Amino acid sequence: QSALTQPPSASGSPGQSVTISCTGTSSDVGTYDHVSWYQQHPGKAPKLMIYDVSKRPSGVPDRFSGSKSGNTASLTVSGLQAEDEADYYCSSYAGHNNVVFGGGTKLTVL
Amino acid sequence: EVHLLESGGGLVQPGGSLRLSCAASGFTFASYAMSWVRQAPGKGLEWVSTIISTGGGTYYADSVKGRFTISRDNSNNALYLQMNSLRAEDTALYYCAKGPATVTTTCFDYWGQGILVTVSS
Image (cartoon, rainbow over all chains, first blue to last red; front, side, top):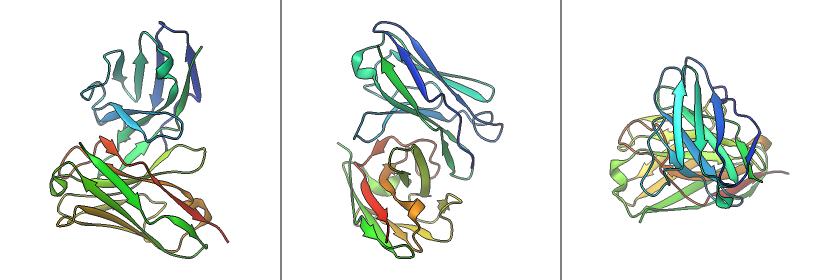
């Protein structure tokens, strides 16, 4: 149950796009199309932003999109807004009802 | 509206026990798998345990296996986490989280606000 690998930080100016990567292994990201992304503002609970690699829950802006290639998944935030500044965590299903998370990426809107 | 409210946290000595509860409302509790996810202070998220909708299947992270027990009471819309042999590294904010399906939890679509557990002498 090793954690997925995310960059510790990412940044972009308002209106720009930023992509956050999430690297796993053939036991999780590479095998299952069940990668999720969560947004967490300081002092708040995580919020599901993307599930099953690229699906958005109701109410999540279409500025948020997800993709996957091999053992690496990505979250892209387009048209960056000030309120997008938060910590972002990826997760992947790893079989037998096990879920593994990434270490998190702090997104700064410059 | 889905609402998850954790309780039962607090300060406990190493080797001690604590039981967390999560009161659920706003959805058909008995139809969904439920989980506990924790976050150590200033750290990332860590999946702890999942229980399927009927309570007939339970799953644990290696870090808590043999020490923690997850359970549920579908008649009272409640989820529990019994934590024994607690260690300093179990100190964290514990979140109750809802899964999107009956058996398999591939993501967590709703989260509680979390309850703090501190293990210290």
